[in-house]
Length: 159
Image (cartoon, rainbow, N blue to C red; front, side, top):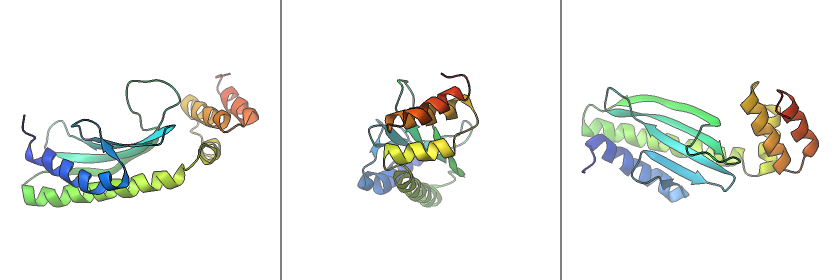
């Protein structure tokens, strides 16, 4: 099946911006991955259910427990919906989204260069919720800080 014009334009723009920095496309989807072994950067050119175009979501997905999906454990929607009206206009929008995705991936790499830096960040910025404490606790444990890990796990009955 031949991709629609807007999907082709997104794919081409993403390939130009994300492939050179080491990201890879997940199959033929609108998702691109930046694998770091213990975390993966996730770039999603999210479709809209009722219109042609794309939102842009970028985030870090922690890989310390098995799951069959990618989550935005530290990430969010970074650009609003860009609607396809014609190929010329959307080529510019797709390039804008892809360049924004590249910038966000590079920011995540700087934010989480090591598990120790990640643990420090998550422990000082832990979401006030069970998953926030869980992620902070696992990162602290993986970085060798058992005391901090135990504290994070105890914050919401996770111990």
